[in-house]
Image (cartoon, rainbow, N blue to C red; front, side, top):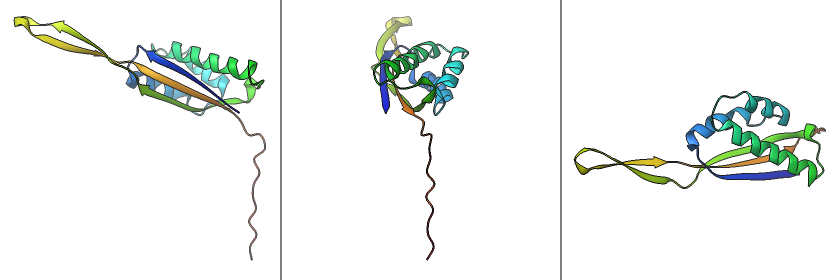
Length: 122
């Protein structure tokens, strides 16, 4: 089973969010939590909350074990931009673009029994 959760319009630039997201991609749930707790970046706290929300959904809604979950896919997309202006000398205006992020996390179960297929030679 897969659990998908989204966080929209996070007020952190996508480039900075991807630095945090790259740390936890394809990690176990517990290891991902530990990495996010000790990461000193602004985006780490909302991503940790999102990861905990996904784990709670998997546990309560789908009755999955937290020890059997891992981050199978995590993406950071660009959200809407806030456009602001900063006044400059001689009546000019300098544009300021405040970027936002949309983050998607998909948790999956680990496959305990991986079957090895043997090929028969003729």
